Image (cartoon, rainbow, N blue to C red; front, top):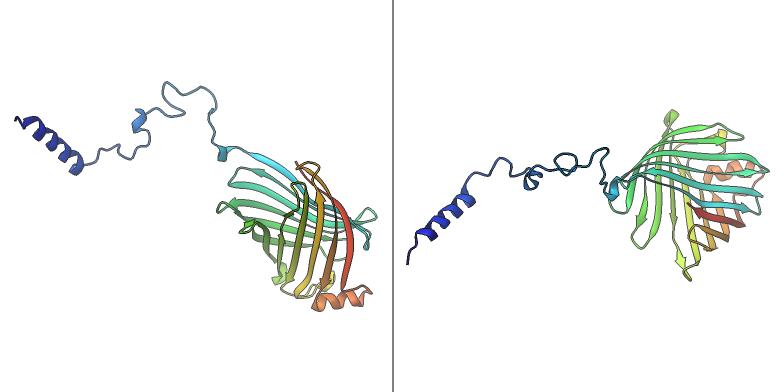
Length: 262
């Protein structure tokens, strides 16, 4: 048997396994002979034609709450809008309440939002609080928003303001599907302050907690009226400010509103 060819192949294989790697071994375009999406005979003229899913830009406007509260005779809004890609977005959140068409108080957050895993975004930006009677406040904001295990929606933000002010806001929501269209949504929100803010009737520590149940019917995925009940309570010095103003430190009331997005 002639082993000359076999020996030659083994020798070449030994060279490939143990020799020096070619200069273009880590070049991602080497296996396409240098052709890319933007260079070579198959590149299309003009702007780049192929874009992957995470490179497209989308937008949305979400009305989580737009409701009337019967006891306070106020209209409450809780809206969010965003524009951007899967990973980077410009986000605006605003919520507040008005009575007889006049805005009593509101808070508006403006964020750069960056996805740090499949379910959560980190958010960095600023917030402006406005009061019909009181002092407006400005804050730097850092938080996260996303979907926790067991499908809890979380939105937590820490704030830093002037004169050493600090605050923390946290919201959690859940959806119980009785049917594909009839949905019960529990919701809880807490707010904390680092120092007293007597101009706005807020004390340090846990200022207030609110919890609600809203039952909605989705005529479509984008349009769902609801009814529900909302309970809220103020604590510590914030409760004292309310009592001094002749108001209750806790209340329960019926609500009716609309949830929508597009």
